Image 1 (cartoon, rainbow, N blue to C red):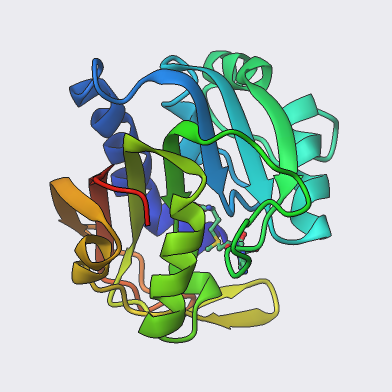
Image 2 (cartoon, protein in one colour):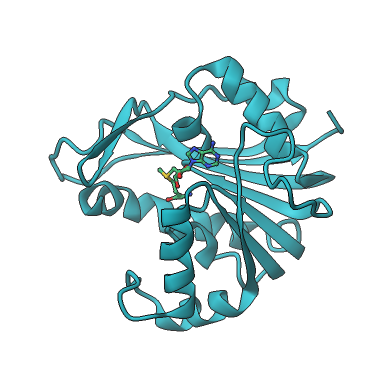
Amino acid sequence: TIYYYNAMDTCLVKRASRILHSEPDVIKGDTLIDTGSGPTIHQLLSTCESFKEIIATVYTYQNLWELEKRLKNEPGGNRYRGAEKEARLRKTVKQVLKCDVHKSNPLDPVVLPPADCLVSSLCLEAACKDLNIYRVALKNISSLLKPEEHLVLSGDLGCSFYIVGPQKFSCLVQRREVLSETGFFIQEPEVLFRDDTIVNDCSDFSGMYFNIAYKEKEM
Ligand SMILES: C[S@@+](CC[C@H](N)C(=O)[O-])C[C@H]1O[C@@H](n2cnc3c(N)ncnc32)[C@H](O)[C@@H]1O
């Protein structure tokens, strides 16, 4: 995991933060939902300045415990650099909910009003085995977002697998056109290729994509 995230680190954290700061009047609002947060907070660090309330969501109970530990800053929770930012984020994350992107309401049984922004980082490609399933999952998470607001979708390029601890996960190679097919207009596509020299067999990803996508219509 450490190698996987170290290799992604430079592009991920810097770019995620640039996205929000390059669009300060656009990407902001009251509520933000992050789908498939996992145990990580890197994808949320830049958002805590721009939203009053962040709702993190996890697929597994293991991730729920890990994330809650980190947000409470309990001993044993993974540490992340940027303590001040993390403290701010802890105050902004008001809830951690269970989430399954394959459900038409991914937060079922919880029903929330649609959010002002949706973040999804490295989640759909991990959760979906093929593009049809990906398309449906994207529609499902889109229901959590208000029309005419933004999805900040990021993930890895050309990645077919990643390894966390003893477990190997498969990963779907993302196709950008799925966004327009599901009612999104990509405003700011960006691709960053790996420039690290870390050689390992934890993942075959070649870079990261970051899309700011505008939700055009209700599906
Ligand atoms: C590579 S991790 C990404 C975690 C985090 N969002 C990030 O950017 O580092 C993939 C995440 O997708 C979650 N996931 C897998 N299947 C899912 C599903 N059906 N619904 C929601 N999340 C799922 C996993 O539990 C895992 O936390």
